[in-house]
Length: 374
Ligand SMILES: NC(=O)c1ccc[n+]([C@@H]2O[C@H](COP(=O)([O-])OP(=O)(O)OC[C@H]3O[C@@H](n4cnc5c(N)ncnc54)[C@H](O)[C@@H]3O)[C@@H](O)[C@H]2O)c1
Image 1: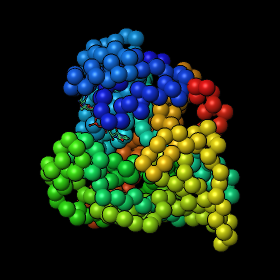
Image 2: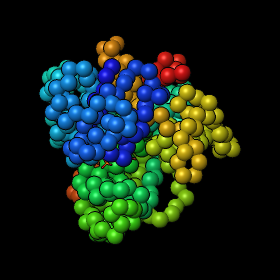
Image 3: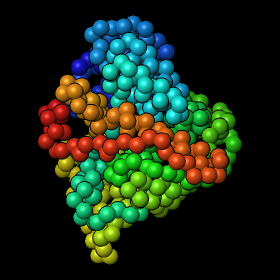
Image 4: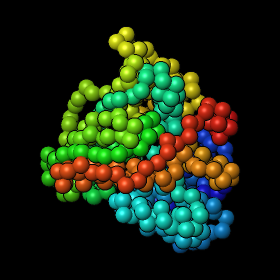
């Protein structure tokens, strides 16, 4: 299928280059609100430059890949659906649950697919963890934790304002990976309780080219809470951009017969460990799985980065008229969880979820291999 990209910023090269990983889609055009930015990408990646309106009416394009900033997601996804095309969007689906519901409604009305990142849960770590849980190797999962802590994004991103505005913050921007992974492993969330805080009302950009500029923080930079899953698992969360250093692991799940450590869900691979009851940790080898082989340099070394698998799976699902794994149901449920964490902290009360979704279908190695280029 042919893809048109709208939004040619920081993350876009990963997607322009994803044809090197997957065999069923091809980026043919790109657009951006800043036309000079889109022209530069078009020439660098050898695709056609178009204005946003021209791209949306280009009959050669089947799916519009939305890589704009979160505040533009709703507008671009709705326009894509109105123009009769399927949409795949970077996360989060929208700025809030209300916007997400509008997208959901239009997608159903138009009978079009809306897929949404993150797709990292389809990686080696997420799928192997899923296999272990589904096979009851550590028994029913009853408890867990997830921890994402750092000192924010103003140190590396060239344009970091949006991270500190409504629709971003540690939960919407990074927590989305953890929550999506947990829904993949445990199913839907039933209720949420949380508290929030903001350690600094202002942030100073230390990355180029805007070094020294000030950002006014408009969304909480710390959220602590508990997710209560429909299957009764309770997961404690700690999401913060107010922490310089820590020693927590990313995700841990505790079953009746053992425990599991799941690596950073921002990546596709990493160190997955299990223990049978109180025996020693066993490192599960996922480095040879199709979406686990470390392939990208990331500061400290090679990591597995196979972004685009969600889009490749959606292309396949459209052809076979089946549910995509990065489905709108999953994205909307995750969006409601994220908003629920904020609402619970604002109202000092338990947030009761109104949506639910099935666990996305397990992705086998064979299916991945069929989608990969050789
Ligand atoms: N940067 C990353 O490492 C990263 C990783 C994963 C996901 N994401 C997600 O990808 C998305 C984009 O992030 P980014 O870091 O590339 O941001 P960015 O600011 O670098 O790029 C966004 C681009 O979208 C364009 N844009 C903004 N509003 C637009 C509109 N209304 N119409 C058309 N174009 C518009 C901007 O001009 C810009 O070129 C976000 O949703 C983010 O959460 C980013």
